Each structure stands twice: as structure tokens, then as C-alpha cells.
Image (cartoon, rainbow, N blue to C red; front, side):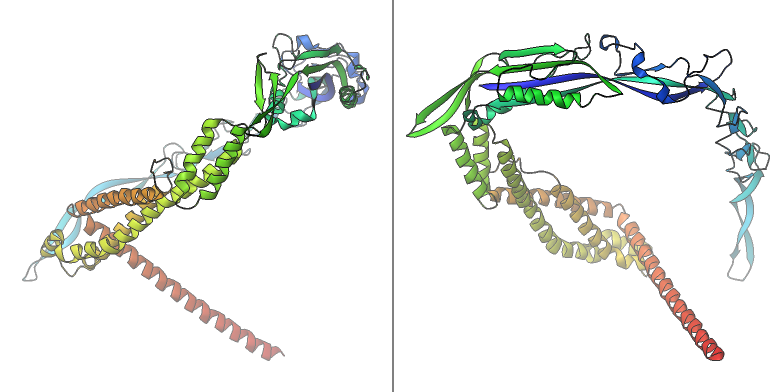
Length: 526
């Protein structure tokens, strides 16, 4: 037998809280409650469980109302504007508070002189951009405009009293519905050998809430016989009179639930239920070994067999042990195949162990794939980079043309081979990183070497494509531009290093001078 004990309690919780809202005139109730403790929350007939729309409702207490001057605005109905801080103005958005707007116009000016061989000079005129400033038309040059929130007044309507200067204070009762559910299960020692049955019974323990009848509870929806179903305002102990664990569990639940009641929480009703599910124990022999199982009715009322340790379970465990041993070497593919066979058996309780081994298999296969990428990266880096350097330094027809039509002594020209090699290596590394972060364990290869060779082949295709793109950009003249950018960055780095060295030397000399001055001052005084 499998027994289930359930107890649900529905509570009505009531608390007193302060409430205030703007006083707009008119009469109010005569005040007779001056403290929250003066209000007896249970003297009021509030909502019942059937009339609740939401889980909580609030009700004002008649006789607790009184009018007070608003503490936020001190009765004036106005408070300082939060946008301008009470100043009434703010920076102009058109000129950003500067009062002037920067503009540009073109002027025809003398920009240079053309010098002839005989020393004669002629002025050269061109259109140039001239910057000038105009007074902002929005703020008339002041840089400040009236605050958009308060219109320049510096004050806005008080959000607490809404400008009336007074508030009505009162008490309100907040009513909430709450519930507590307790469950326990009892079964024969033989059932413990069939964990699937126990988990299935617990899974069926679902308390259903109906919208039409708030918090009305249906029975647990597993198939069984109802031994007790009792609904009362408050269930007393010893309602289930049998001397058993069931009665003790139900009495324990009743005691725990009653401890929640008090001055702010009253019991509305309680529902106690006890179910019994019949289980037929089965023992059978296969190949000279004895196995255990049981037959019980499921959620749909149909009987099914729940297997404990069975021949299929032993086979699945054997395959899982073999798969765990083979992970990490050339037998990783065999481990993957064994896991797939275990999954087809649908053995209860083996999912966690199976997933743990599968994660190790996937990690190792991805490592092998990435190993192929890394090997091909170093092969291309060691063999392809010298070829690329020689191409740009000796065979590059574009660079020959550039040397012919420009000054060959220009510094960035000599940087072209090295810069292109650096770009090529950077692209290779980026491609390797992108390929390695993807999951490649789903590929179907019969050996682990298939993952290595696939990784090498795919990376070779990517590297050839990157090389083709780089050489194609060379014929567009972009190699000269990138080399010039690298040369400029290097010059900036050198200048920054030189400035840093000079700053350190100056700081050292200054510290040394200050230290010497302090030493002389010390000897002079003492």
C-alpha cells in the first residue's frame, strides 16, 4: 500500500495601516480611533472567500479620519520644482547654456604665394572655412531659459496634497487570504526498491485552484481509494482515529497549522484528505537471478508495471560503466555509441548519470576538433607568412607601381610586408577563435581522428579564403593605407613613451631637489 496524507488550511489575515489622501473640502467622520491598536479588525464583516477578486483588499475604518496640514509643502500646496531646483530656469537646450551658436561660412582669402624661378611671387586665393559665433535666438544670449516643468515659477503643485495644502489621515484594514498545505507519504519497505513508483505518486500531488470557487481544492489526482475527506472551519485532532502513522501525521499537521492563528490571522476552513493506492509486489527470476517490481494504478487509472532493478537496468548500468571508462581516448566514439544505446532503453533514473558522461564526450570531441584547427593554424602561420612577406617585398606589382609614381623613400612603404603579415596572422587567430567557440560534437565520424582531420580541413579552407581576400585588397591599394596607419600608430606610441620618460626624469629631479631642500632646512633648524 501507498498512503498519502494532506491538510490544507485557508487563513484570513487582517492588519491596520495608515492611509492619507488630499482633503478637498467637505465633512468627514467624527474621529474616535486615535491609535491603530484601538481598531478591532475582527469586529468588521469584510469579504468572504467567495467574493474575493484579488488576493488582497483594503477598507477604510470609519471614525479614524482627521485632517492635517500637509507635511510635504507645509500647507502651501506648492513645492520646489525638481527639474530646476526652485531656480525657475535651466540651461538652454539650443546652445547648451553657452549663449552662442558656432557656425561656419566660406570666404575667398589669400592662402599662399606662388614663387617663380626668378623670385617673382604671385598671391594664390582659395575658398576656406571660417568659424564664427552668433547669439542664440532661443535664450537671447543668456544661456538660460524658463524651466519647462514650472514655467519659470520655481514651484510646482505638491504631489502629496495635490495643491490643497491639507490631507485626510485615516486607518485602513488590509485583508489578505493565505493558505498552507502539508503532505506526507507512507509506503511498504518493498516499495522503496521501486523508486519510480514513489516519484510518480509524489508527482501526482497537485492541488488545483478553481477560479469560480476561490481556493477550493480538488483531491490529489493520482488513482486510489479515499479513506478520509473532511472539510470544517477548524479540524480537531484525532479526526482520523486509527492508531497509525497516518493519524499521527494528520494530528501533527493540524497542530502546525493552528500555530499560525493569532490576533491578526484567523482560520477560515481546513480540508483534510487521506488516500490509499493499492500496490501488488512482484518478484521474478531471469537467468538464475531474482528481480523486484510492482504493479500499481497510474494517474489515468490504468495499471502499469514499475520495474526496480531489472535485467534491462543491469544492461544499461553495464553500458554506462563501459562508456565512462572509454571517455578521453580513442574510445570516445565507442562511449558515444553506448550512450545512444542506453537512451533507447528508457531506463528510469539514469538520465543524470547519462548526461554527465555525455558532457565529457562532447567536451573531448570538441577538444579534438579544436586540436585540428590549432595544428593547421601553426602550419599556415609558419609556412604561409614567409611566402606573404616575400610577395609584398619582391613580387608585388602594385608596390612596384607605387614606388614608380611616388617617393620610394616614404617611410610607410618599407612597412608594407611586415604589416600585411601581422594582419594575416591576426585574421588567422580570429578565425581560429570563432571556429573553436562553436560546438562540433554533433558531427558523425566513426573515429576520433575524423574530428582532427575535419578541423584541419575546414580551417585550411578558411585560411585560403582570408589569404585571397588580403591579396585582393592589395590590388585595390588598401595595403598601402593599412601600412601607413600602422606606421602612424607606431610613431604615436614612440612619442608617448618618450614623453613618459621625460616626465619620469623631471619628477625624479624635482623629488631630489625637494629632498635636498628638506635636508638643508633640517640642519639649519637643528
